[in-house]
Length: 236
Picture 1: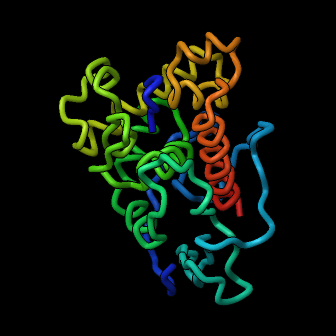
Picture 2: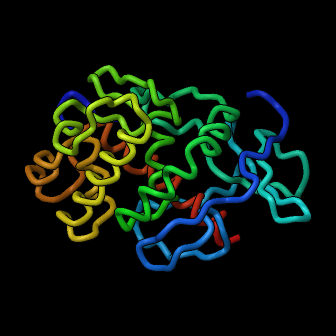
Picture 3: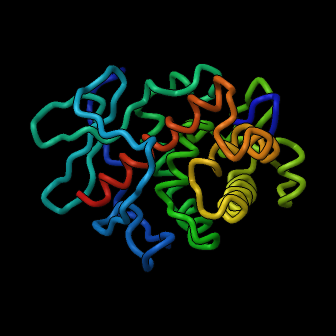
């Protein structure tokens, strides 16, 4: 979500039948949550060992199909991602685990496509979307950001998204913007995410560091935590 300063239940479900492939930043086309993994190095990446309310767990059936649950019903389930560590201002705050799982399933193919087109990892886009909107294409932030990737009007115009609520337009514009931020900040994911939240100018003004805004300092590690967990699950 872009701030004003800038741009429970129980049970298990199976959001994917056949995971979709995508192009990572350092690897060939592969399954979106397949076995290939690229090491991620950043001080914000945290490995969780203790469960927390709202977590999602993952296991695989005999055919290797992922099974997701908000309860750790057996030792075969491992922590997949946390759902209760979002910035307080995020439209995705409080989104139920089933909705996240349904969003993963609904938008996996489109996310894989735009990831490949922009040489981004689909896991990164999934992580960002989970924090930005919880996969809700109609999400609106208090600052007026809209859609899956929470585009502000100027950013949407800049990248050709006429309807910010249209999932495909929103994904294409948001992914291109993130790609451009990665290029501008020389591949530094931490700074690119900070700029996505607070605006490019804020990152530059703060000496190429995460701006000292409470929301941004919550947002960046929240995205990175999810990204790390998705990468970890992909390699497991």
